[in-house]
Amino acid sequence: MPRDFYIYLISRFASATALTMMRAVVAWHIYSLSHSAFHLGLVGIVQFVPALALTLVGGVVADTFDRRRIINLAQLVAALAGGLLFLVTRAGAMQLWTLYAGVLVIACAGTFEGPARVALLPQIVGTERFQRAVTISSTNQALAFASGPALGGMLIAGFGIVVAYGTFLALIAVAFVTVWGLHIGPNVLTTRRTLSLAAIREGLSFVWHRPVVLGCMALDMFAVIFGGATALLPIYANEILRVGPRGYGLLNSALEIGALSMALTLMLRPPIRAAGRTLLTVVALYGVATIVFGLSRFFPLSLAAYIAAGMADQVSVVLRSTAIQLSTPDELRGRVSSVNLLFIGASNQLGAAESGFVAALTTPTFSVVSGGIACLCVVLVIALRMPELRGYRIEPKH
Image (cartoon, rainbow, N blue to C red; front, side, top):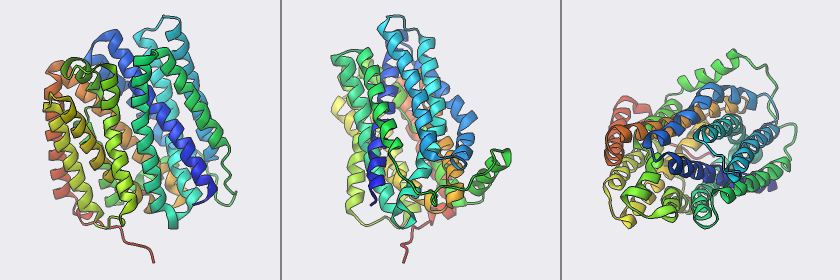
């Protein structure tokens, strides 16, 4: 692998650790101020609105300008928002609307950083090494996603929320410097084009006319909308399992611990060829693990169920990423990545909102368990309605 690939991994690790830590810290901060499942669910809406409005634009921008500089500018914006939360919290003047404003600004920055970062990877490694690069990058990301929430929980418990916000700023600084140091030859950069609705429509049309690509995105979106329990983890940690901030950090990291262990396993075994059937199977297992987590009142079982969900999700991530990126020409990668990230954003944020609102109307347990059952129903419907996805295989290149 080229030197720039490892620099990319360092930057991605720092950025992903910072953002996942920030999500966990903000969720804990909001719940400590409001003690409301509704307000936790509202975080998902605040994060989804900019994703809906700006992600497709971010894809066109990623196909038009230098992707490294786009990432750097987005990181600067996120750092400004994090700095605001740090200063206001330190002054003891934090209010809910300030937290939501910080979440909104960081989410807006992410709509531009995400497509640029995803589209940058094939530029660095080339298509012939891309599948292995995805596996390594996914392992790196899983490690970061596991580290971020755990770090946030430990910092809150040991030093307080102010230190957690300060750590976010330090990690963003590392991510900024490492992206700035990437060297990509001009022959690899994408052809400049005009920012227009036609450019957005071109990316959407490409996805719509590729059943496997569309099927991968739809499966992820609808399964996670119904199957996610992350937004309710503060309630589970505080009121159901009664494990406090350290237990909250472990629960927040459990999904990524499972993802990391599975990513390492995937690195050691031959590539999965029967991608379609495997994808449907692991998403169904994700739904089952969510149901077990929702019903559990025993912390080790809850932790194990969430780790199992993370393992299933990691297989899904690798298969979906490989299929989508290898099916897309470089000049469309930013836009197709933005469509994929829009689906992912919709699933994560609407899933957070759905679980929070259902929990507010019923109970947290009902919200999580019914979501897991709905996830299984989604898998069944897509398996029956999309035979192209069910039979899809990733064939080796010769």
